[in-house]
Length: 221
Length: 262
Image (cartoon, rainbow over all chains, first blue to last red; front, side, top):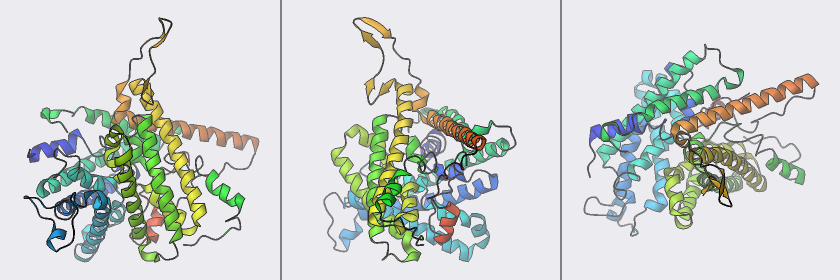
């Protein structure tokens, strides 16, 4: 079944938000949300990388890992390399994805530094941290694994869109969290709860609010 | 990168210390706040939590030993990339083994969090902070110690969540307790929200708060009695900013927030 854009967007941003419902990308969520400006920079960088990483890993999945079918060809098979019956999904998926993401992050960093210095200054310091961000790796896995048709995964354009939406959901959660934490810094919090514990409790309340989106418009994710 | 040898490396005492100060004093996630994603996501039941901890520990021990063995051959500039490849290889092995041996329900519950061990900061953190500068035996013990600490935290968190959210423990229903036809403990009314996302955040927040409070009290007691300062925590993990700077754009261990109570 083909999934619609709107359905994907609502699903990834609100219903199963990457941070608040799927627990992906928690390190930056708690680490880089002390100031709103930081969270915007990190959120934008993650959105950018998630979009690109989703597209590339979906391509890798279809044209390197999966065996040739009538819908797509395995490029390794095309150049004459042996392709086992089930493709390379089981043995190479994790390794190839992490290498793609690590390479992509390095590449984006280089391109930005050379061509768009202003943008690099704004989000450059967050880029190295993104390689080990579970949200990026997680969206790549989810796009090609746990979707409705696990043997095929999302097609490339939808995968990229899902990555973008996941990034927007991440940005939204980061923004809300940093807004809360900027206020919390001026409040009188009990000593034991200061810092991380109160941030977790706030995140819990946010997640509770996001739980209200479940089954929104009848979309099940 | 090589850490100065302090004379105890390789001795029996040294080896024991490599292991012994890890489970509690360097506990993940509670002391060094790393590896939060799987901790929150799969701690819905003790079985899931223990499986996750076992998988992570297996990867951690293997990658620690291998990285320690090849540490002299890894060029310094690309060491993080090498670590990631090593870890990814072991994760793939664990993934395949789990698919073959673990029950279907566990595999479904852990889902993408098994491949996500690759980007788990704990494992990369240990490779960078310990295995890259210690011998294989020390690194093995270090992996076991950290893994044991992770297991303990997972059992604690998932135990609370399973009991409160489902009234079960290790898959067994705890209530009602009926002895000789008489109900001693009535059927428990589960608080389902603790099994869902908000409950995980709130429970972790409360536990972090509890541990911060406990360490505050201990510090207070130490100050009053004038005993030497409380043991240093988290000393073996590098500061994320420093690690990222050293790696020249290498993935740091994530911007881990300050340890609670620090």
